[in-house]
Image 1 (cartoon, rainbow, N blue to C red):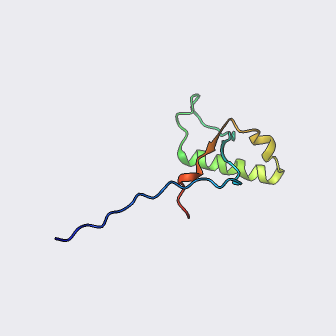
Image 2 (image 1 turned 45 degrees about the horizontal axis):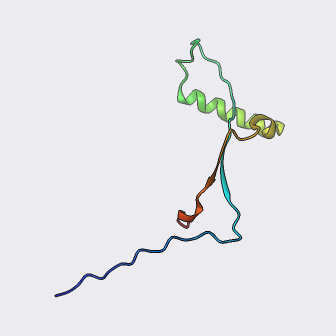
Image 3 (image 1 turned 135 degrees about the vertical axis):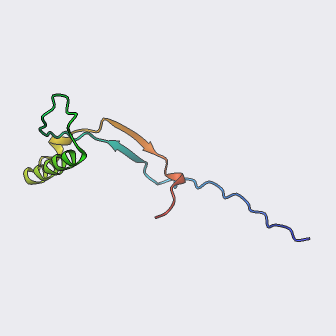
Length: 86
């Protein structure tokens, strides 16, 4: 009778003692666009994309990224012990 090979579960990787923690930050970037509906119900994905790209170009042109984005509104430490390479 042929027996199936047993697999031994891998031990979880432990963070290196000198590894610095990694954080995930959420930021807000405001932009505006014009539409014909007072509630914006006529705003399309294409309109949103065009307005956002215009805003990004303006931020690059005037170098206002820090002022426009500000501090993160949500931050948490990332668990890097389970991340796959690549």
